[in-house]
Amino acid sequence: MVVTLGLLAALTWALAPARVHFTPAPLDPPPVDCPKVAREFVPSNVTEILDPPLTGLSAAQKNRALYRMNMEPCTCGCGLSVAACRVEHPACETSKNLARKIVAETQAEARK
Image (cartoon, rainbow, N blue to C red; front, side, top):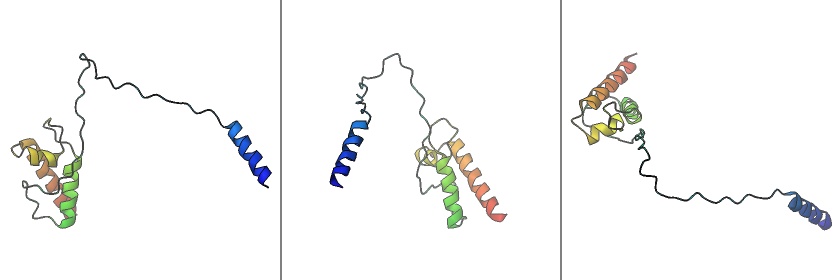
């Protein structure tokens, strides 16, 4: 039995494919003439916003509205979510209107 296991191990070792040894690419800085890539949208994790007020919503509706505001990008060009734009740029009319629209849609869904 031990001899059989030894022969099986030797056969497995002999038939094993050679492993490739990869070398990582050098981390040189990008060339000066490399075009800058626009920042992609990254969802946020804001749990409270002041305007528009969410006081008229139930806990589930508030969570749904905040989820949408965190997942949807603001169209003002800041590259932030609607919720993050409301926190970082409270004077932004674009994010304010988008947030009000999301709250209104959440309230309308609850009435259905």
